[in-house]
Image (cartoon, rainbow over all chains, first blue to last red; front, side, top):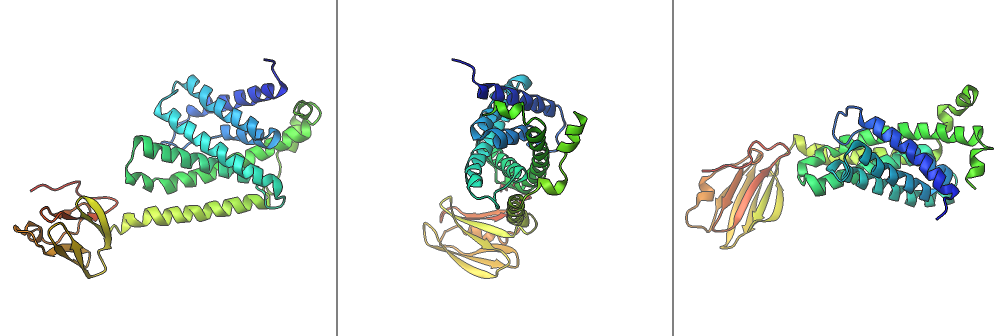
Length: 180
Length: 134
């Protein structure tokens, strides 16, 4: 097995995402399941600049290694995180494919960020409902959680848009040559 | 480096494209739907669930005055709905416990006719009782 260029890109982006993930886990959260999800920014950047496969690698490595660092591997928090990441990456795959075809109406980083974070929240919520708290009262939380997901999705999308622009313009020569 | 960073901080309007607006608007519509579905009941909570043999049969609005015939195991139980309350009025059972229970209206309250296998529970997002024993 040789290390390919793509592997280096995946490793670098995943390391960045894991760092953000771990740093974020130190922040207090007002509600279980609600956090800014800034590691999502890295997934978005990976998706727009390097394609879906890279984004999927980055997302899953982040969940796996992040949980090993925090010590939540295979715990309920990990299950929720994993299901959320799975849903979010599937939605990004579906929309990303469609977005490539239709030029004007395709969502940019902000739209993709909102889709990703809302899909993540939905997956996480249903995992919590099916696996841990199968009580209908949980659904009263859903609107609040989804509102938070929308807000944080917009914020991380805006950050990702700037980051993508930066990477595209300022490092045209060095970085993009690396990525075919 | 710093110059590059400045250049990277796009003005807000350049970071949003029409496709983003479509996504955000549909997200807002979804949120509206979620709030109206899951938060409305918390304030009304004026429904009752009728069960036959432990299986859910019908939900009734307690502010829609009506009579309901419920086909139970022995025969038809007659239920009356009036102004946010519900009660058994006629029952084919022998003891008539269900009828003596009278009106029920509080979230979580429960009336049952065991011989006829018909039961009613007032639904509410915030039930006052989990169960009531006699």
